[in-house]
Length: 311
Image 1 (tube, rainbow, N blue to C red):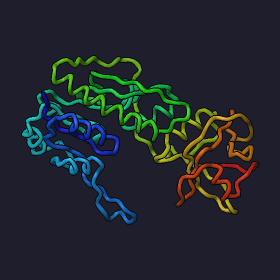
Image 2 (spheres, helix red, strand yellow):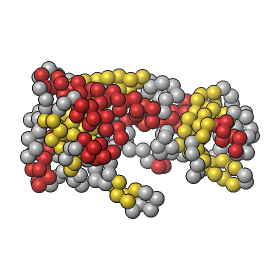
Image 3 (spheres, helix red, strand yellow):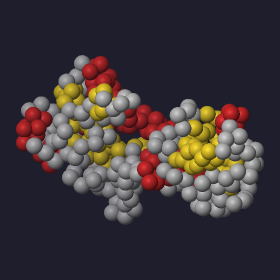
Image 4 (cartoon, rainbow, N blue to C red):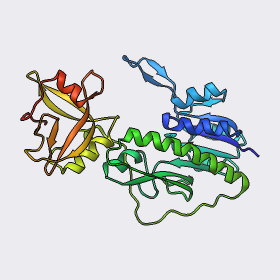
């Protein structure tokens, strides 16, 4: 059998789940996504979300309300007579009336091992905290922030040099498969939901620009986690003098290394930088207005050498 599904999502992360639901043969009543946003160099072009583009490719009705708090929007959603709503990184609060409208309620694909990292940025926060493991979970949604009972879990190791972008892509695929499995079990009435633990709750607040500057006075493992947790977006950065002028350099990849020195100081010809304790070696960087480049390629084009210092 198939279910009549409302899908709610916005970024690239949500697209594989939408595609997987369609490929599994479920009936997609409508797709809800964030409205088109201004983009382009001048910010004048309205760009639809990745989910909207995929839904239009699949021939599914797209709805882009600014809010779901109004009675008219809630009635419009209820009129779809859906069996279930699937939410993956939608970005809007779902009021109680929306949560209760589908026959089987709403389920959410969340990129953490709840109750750790409830909230907006679980992938980045897990890496920045040095977690060795994370995963995808399917939970039944309720009014609290990611507080609902969990039905399915798929764990994923976080490798020592893995970036947030790499983890994002791995979890994206896991999440799509998990959502389809959850729908199949719900259709058969065989999906049990278990309440989250009361202990171990942490919150993954949205990344703020003020967090992106690298603090070399931290231990090397913390600096490394900071860099990879913010890669590729928004990107950790530090300043260094190039050709007599200070330049902001985005640091995209690093690895732990041996060595010691003044925090922020370059201690060899391989772009190894000392931290408060230990050191890291920069593997990939990006100059302002340039493209990401391997450290050795960057060093060929910039006079950055041992003895110089990041700030």
